[in-house]
Image 1 (cartoon, one colour):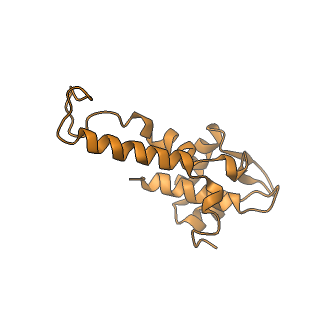
Image 2: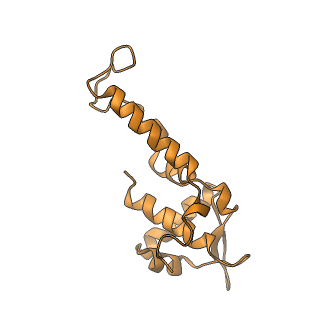
Length: 136
């Protein structure tokens, strides 16, 4: 349910969360550790910086680091700007008229799954995932 871009983003933020206080990690280093193409991850990190999730510093000793504590960053914060999951409110079967009053055959099942998924993304913080990804 999460794209490769989303997975790379999550892993990159976990890696940055594990950096010593005040340190930066280079895009190449992060890309190599999360298994992402270098140029692609560099552009992705710039996008996450625009979203206020990471900050960057150019020059010697520069790179990327989290813009706020990992306890304050949810999976939703990372995934939403990339995949727009909040807009998954259309009909699962593509019907133009699908609602609580006129549901398609899977409406009630899909609504529950979608809501549970969004709740999971909004309640899971990067801090909870540190040291559990096997990246070290």
